[in-house]
Length: 208
Image (cartoon, rainbow, N blue to C red):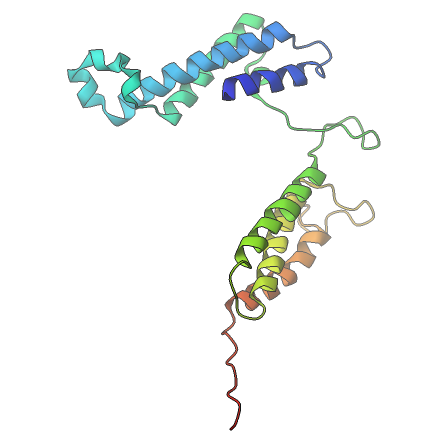
């Protein structure tokens, strides 16, 4: 499924590549990667995880139906496969290996940029909503849910700001990397953390 989805997404990207990539190149690359992932994954498992057994039983190397795959071996296999494909089509290795996730904004210049709006929508919208939703499904002490929201928002905003162009009239505040959004998120996050960790308020007993 991953290879097919990767191929379909590759075709979509190929249409936006100014003719550098064709449909046949995309599916050829998928084939190379699939072979590299499977062979590399299996050989990686054999070498890294159970070399003694397979040296004594080499025929078992081909018994893939019994299980045994290694991600790191698959990664090595994919790297080799991409290198072979890049040599075949006469392009650089990273021109094939890189998977740019970028958008050229009409008013933002010619350089591709991170779609930080999507990052914010996913993290500060969907992910944060799910965290708060499930956390608040059970009764919590006063302020705990609010604390989780504030801390979660602050952490996600701090992360997204690394991929977001700072406000033009402010730029980076210091160290050429820290933005106003990150500075403002720190006290918000600290307050949220305090709400989460503070001792639960004691309920007073009414006098008879």
